[in-house]
Length: 381
Image (tube, rainbow, N blue to C red; front, side):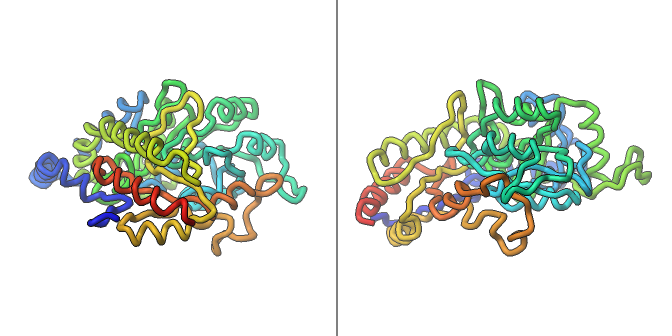
């Protein structure tokens, strides 16, 4: 039994670790007198793009806006369809609808990523219940859930064969790699959330996109600020979605430690792998040729709720990402088209997934306490 509570995540710990540098960055911005789309945003955009091996970075207000603007830059709008998944944060699906397009949801595989086989079926026009898709598919949005890259080789091949652009949802996968290459540069555009608990998190809301396409980058910059090409003259019906200077300055500080923080997450995951081996739990699977960054370390068990209660009694906090698939939530139930055969894996996972404590400042002693608590209670459930 632990003597103190071990949180599932702890964004304050991330601030305290770099408190001096973050406070200096905040002071620098406050004293500059420039608070929106200034030097800090420009520098962060360049530094984040370089980290990802991309040519362009575009800072925006939050991760949902990043998805919306990315889709709009690809020409997605009313009357179009976008293929994505239901086993994700609701923001992914909400963003599609905010463009006026129709989300078409496909199932996931054993690694919680988009099922390429069902994606291909949908692109061939087939849906659940024998229905046919009438709207043209204008984009595919795979989600690198929990920090584990999707099957990018197959998804990109399928997308190329059907001539449909890919917008990667990298909101949980900053720095993850597929076949030695950082995710986010496989598709035409990638969208990242910078919410405080993400692998790279602001101290408030924030989002960023990356692309290697100069024309798309220019369009994204116009769309994030009212469609302005010159100030006060809107050439497109755009948004107001600007990353502020304070958050950009904070993110620049935190970006310097992102590689080390991802390495720590990977070390924690390896410790969990070793310590939980042999328990009646399914541990996270690694897709071949990938290096996940473990935004979450998610186990699956049919005794999920009982296990969660037992761990909480021992001071180990957990979370469920996510308790209900998007297509079964009240706002979306029975109105979105699904891939052929429905989403059985997605629906099964919703009742099994449990996220263990995972953040870079989690110490070895705390990790050992989590393992000990699981070894104590999991076999009894």
